[in-house]
Length: 351
Ligand code: PMP
Image 1 (cartoon, rainbow, N blue to C red):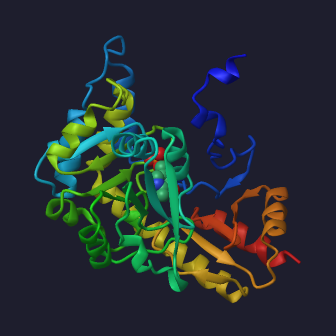
Image 2: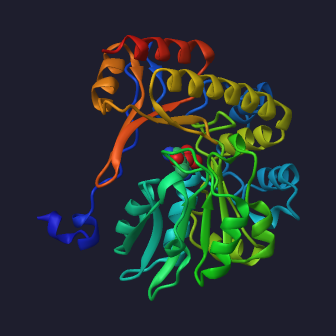
């Protein structure tokens, strides 16, 4: 029986469950925080050019064009501060593999991004969840050292809450920890602060970014790490030889070079987010002010799962999330104005 031949850590673990795919047709998909708008026209052009390029050849193993363009766009000293990956999930995998071994553990806040637990499970490592305090503040325990604590992960802005831990607090957590602090900035383009400066000040601060959200490239799979050059060099040993394909490298390079497009899309989505927050509040929801491209809301009647099902029946897909010992609610991605109007109208009709 092959079952007994798998590593015990694998047999024990639960798989990570990504958000549902939408049924073909006219479903309004607001459940996985994708961008409802297409990427910049330059990106589409770059994809077309790359697709007619020499696809019989392997791509650049270290995505040089992307790293140059990203270093430029983000004001980093150079491309050696960046490691490109097949989505930021791959970067997170590389980080957990690089820092956390069997019998050791990582820490994450609760509730937050469930994938970190899966990555620890794969390693045969343990995870420890530190609950957020009221108002989504991090307790002092989040920055405390412990034997065998090898990595601390902080999604900032957090998911599902959309809340942001201010940079000065992130800096003091990093200073108090002996292990690396990963600041997962998947949603940071929708916020008004980021932690890139901290990477230059402290070699134990590592920032991850994605092109799946603000840049509208979830279908391409591209993410990256920002870390000091010696950290990037060490972690590069773990990545697959050709972890990013030629088409996505071209697309990602064009995307980070289109910062004006990015600002326009972010401004548009943030305006829609503001409207969502106001109307959901008027409907009686407790709405957590968001710094991301989604809104976390809870209704005092507690009927979140039935609202999710009712919306789904009406071809609107949002995320129902339930966290043991904590509570549940709806996480609704910011869509186009029309999509959000349809979703809000349905929620108003729910009884
Ligand atoms: N970090 C967080 C907090 C996320 O919510 C997501 C999206 N599921 C990711 C990372 C991964 O993004 P991707 O792999 O698409 O870059």
